[in-house]
Amino acid sequence: MRDVTKDNITDVFMSYMGEDMNPRLREVLSSLVKHLHAFARETNLTHEEWNTGIAFLEKAGEISDAERHEFVLLSDVLGLSSLVDMLHNRPEGTSSSVLGPFHITGSPDLAVGADMRKDFDDTVLLVEGIVKDPDGNPIPGATLDIWQTAPNGLYSSQDPDQDTYSFHGLQKVGDDGRYAFTSVRPVEYTVPSDGPVGDILRACGRHPWRPSHLHFIAEAEGFRPLVTEVFPEDDKYLDNDTVFGVRKDLVMTYVPMPAGSFPEEGYELSGKVPGDYLKVNFDLTLVPKD
Image (cartoon, rainbow, N blue to C red; front, side, top):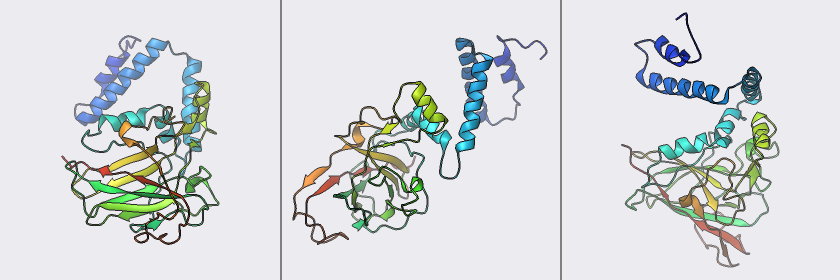
């Protein structure tokens, strides 16, 4: 095509794609380019602005490594990660939420009732619930990948003073579908703001804070995997999560429990919690695969 213009360049791009192209790739790429071209026309994008955008992407690539995923963070703060989650969420199951940039693989086994608090001297949090199907039946043998921040607001991958798998565990539920563990209450924290994504937040007058939460990846044979987070109802950032991860059904309550009421058996800390503690009960509902 010799006569490419601002009005026909989108159609010309479409005509350049081969006939044997993967149909889904054609659909997605065609839509992406149509929207990109329409965006440039609508905003009358300048060379300076285009160069700024390219420089932003280059910086995001430079700062990313095996533990820092700046493009995932960008997707999160723009709401794209949450939108993709919501587009494919099944209403009969627990809502999905963002994975976040701090998940690590290979977490150690965490027996039902085991403790993730270890040597951190904070109020004990007892977490339990049932992994079940949409009819309320427990799912025996389901596995939960669990992780959270330490009391200092950092994930282990951010904090050289923590063990690699601090506040991480992989738990297989029993025949009753029950999961249970002890930990400490997670705290609010900021997403990394020392890179190009932080520049965007500041330019938009936005804060980098997330409400405190517990992360779960729940999996079971014959069911769709669930990636989600659970948030306390009293968190001050619940209605202004910078990565748009909160869903109504993912809000729970930490219930204050009196001294002397900690279960006498079934937990690694049984007989070792003389004072007050917190408790939360949250069930996870998995949806069968199509």
